[in-house]
Amino acid sequence: MLQDKAMENSSTTNWGENGQLEVLTFDIGEERLAIEAVSIREILDLLPETCVPGAPALVSSVVNFRGKIIPIADLRVAFGMPRDPAEAASTDHRIVVIETEFGGEVLQIGLRTDKVHEVTILDLAKSCEPPVLGMRWKREFVRELVRQSDCVVLIPDLPEIFTAMAQAA
Image 1 (cartoon, rainbow, N blue to C red):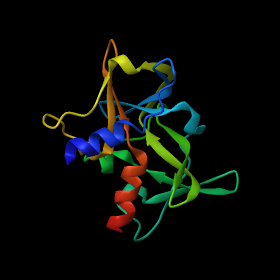
Image 2 (cartoon, one colour; image 1 turned 135 degrees about the vertical axis):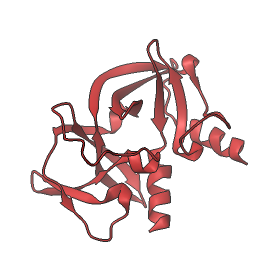
Image 3 (spheres, rainbow, N blue to C red; image 1 turned 120 degrees about the vertical axis):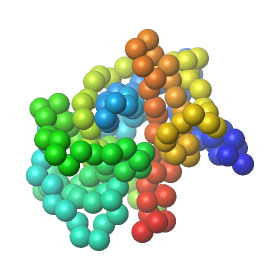
């Protein structure tokens, strides 16, 4: 069943006819992640966040950007990555605003990142589904892993992450 789920997830990556995918790469902690470039709406410097009492830890705050309230997701929570409360925001930290469909609605959600790298092309030939063993992340939250010369890039399954968060609430 887990293998079926992984296959289902990997089939949701929109690889082009040429076996390539344009993505924005960014870091969260020591990990390199990628989001499909077509989902990106803005890359913002950090903005003052307003905590939302009672909200799930994954999306526990919002920002006011150009008069629009945008929830901020911390993918560290989804992937069980610790955040050092003493860690100060650096000039590299950004909010990547994506547009995604959730519950039949198109939403804008900000992803808190430690560093944004670049828009780049990933190759299907260098990708693989998440392994059954040897991962520290929840396998169902990972669509694919893609090898690059200097690292492995994780493509998160954001709809799965946000659905799990909503069901847990």
